[in-house]
Image (spheres, one colour):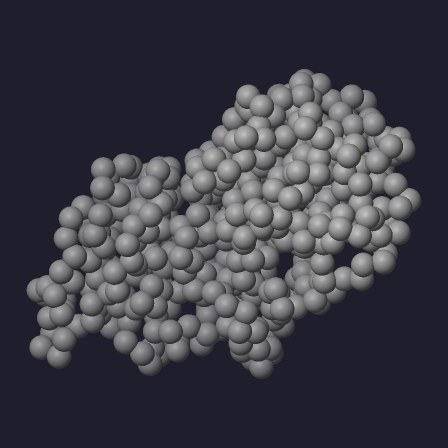
Amino acid sequence: MSFNHLGLDPRLMKAVGAMGYTTPTPIQNQAIPLVLEGRDVVGIAQTGTGKTAAFVLPVMQRIPAKPGGVRALVLTPTRELAVQIEGVARDVAKHTRHRVAVVYGGVGYEPQRQTLTRGVDLLVACPGRLLDLIARGDCDLSSVEVLVLDEADRMLDMGFWPDVRRIIAKLPASRQNLLFSATMSPEVLKIIAATLDDPARVEVTPATTPVEAIAQSVYPVGNKDKAALLLSIVREHGLKKVLVFTRTKHRADRVARVFDRAGIRGAAIHGNRSQAQRQKALESFRAGHVHVLVATDVVSRGIDIDDITHVVNFDLPDVPADYVHRIGRTARAGRSGTAISLLAPEEHGQLRDIEKAIGAILPCEDHPGFTYREERIVPDPERVAVSDARPAREGHAGAAAANLGGSKPKPKRRRSDGRSASGRNGVSGASGANAAPLVADTDVRAASKRTPSDLQPRQRARRRRPPQG
């Protein structure tokens, strides 16, 4: 199906052509007609699947391009994501003559106030700065016809919901409501249910299903060896577009400095950087001047760069859905990609939860020639991913399990007599179908050499080393 069949008018069709779109993605194909009908919509799709255009195109067809106040309001949790949405809206506005603006914190207040004074049809905003503008009488939302909450689950995670409620209270009761996100937790839907009117639900893929073009693997490594191992992998394979995720801002800065000192251009983006610094780092990474970009989860969903070849989990996330969001930054626009996770001994609980959520076992890899200084703990190659052994598509991480929870027991280390602290033959004492027993071994290849024949083949993620070049 082409965009011609979705109900977009000639102005929007010109915008589609100018933006290089040829065939609508599944989320665009299903959501655009519903939005054009005026329905409330809850849209769930993976990152990199065209969610932004799925609401920007029909919303800009529905609202008038004339004076009268803000007609469409898009709320989003991060500055990067706000800038990305504004960019798509401006591309469309070249053909529809709508006035588009974006407001967020970390930059000057006065230029944003002046922009609103001149008139805006579609406003993209982060909640904090928008409330400041409202409180000072510089933003009137009484004419809003369409409200879009983008990455609604992330706004809940980041504590923005009290602000969002305050903003919603300023809007007309009669309006169209659109929720778009890579995941949509029951908590979000419960909180927002009172504002929705018979919403249509569009779920293109389960929220925790990784993009199937991504080759995923795990490198067991001690925490202090992580930076050196990652540097060795990047250098040996000549990787030029690597996105690295860390748990904290401090670790992001430290990892970026490791690459800079090694002569490989790196940069870090996180909440402590100014908007100008973050935007400069993103643009340098997009242009290829920076080869390794290190980020925290707070800004991850605003990274919209199509040609990232590798995503690295320097630290495994605590929430399995964040794993899917992270690795979804690669394999965009029909490309393939690679996701590498550096697994410290204390992170096996997170690995177990991730494998349960995506319904697949992630294969272990070793980096030949690298000298590991710290003890490593290798996951048991015969572990299973989910209690009902739901099969994943062969060669890839498969469909998501519904339950993303689960405890995170600390891995047991091998005792001096060669046995684990709670089991026999080097395997921890975890039990049950969901357990992820741990094998301590100094050679990953020796511990996982049985994997191709012994592991259930439909529960294995594809084994592939990072391509050279």
